[in-house]
Length: 178
Image (cartoon, rainbow, N blue to C red; front, side, top):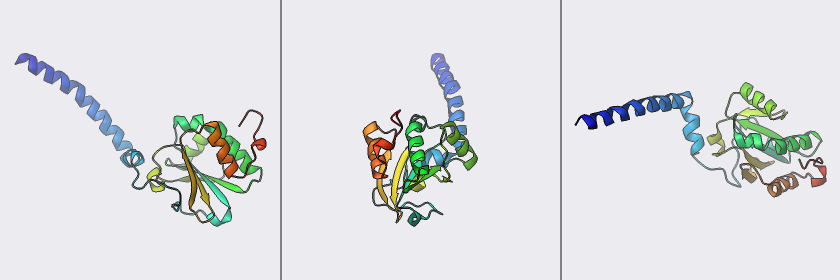
């Protein structure tokens, strides 16, 4: 009986602090945690992107770059994102919109650490876009409909496909392959 009591005391002494830490973590932003893990509706080709204030008709194509602060795969994808940003600023006929769930100030700071300078940065919950992982690229046409989408760090052949769909010739990439 004494042995069982000691085991129970040990289990409680370990589980209570873990429960408290988990509870505090979820209190920070429970909506972001639970809903980004499981969006209400997963984005699919043909869906209209619900992003207020975007004039889809102003551009033939818009690349919605969905990231979040601290995302390892977003950081690993930074050279590719830099290439796309350079191509946009070089006058190619597409527009890039970065969407992050964090406040704009934190998002801008994160983008600077990635070496990304984009003029259009928005704040939205990932689940509102049907996104469950970052980075996610949504290629959206002039009507606001998703033409293509990619999730995660892309392999080189997928990066090439994205650039081709954006109308960027691979010879436009710099000599480092980015």
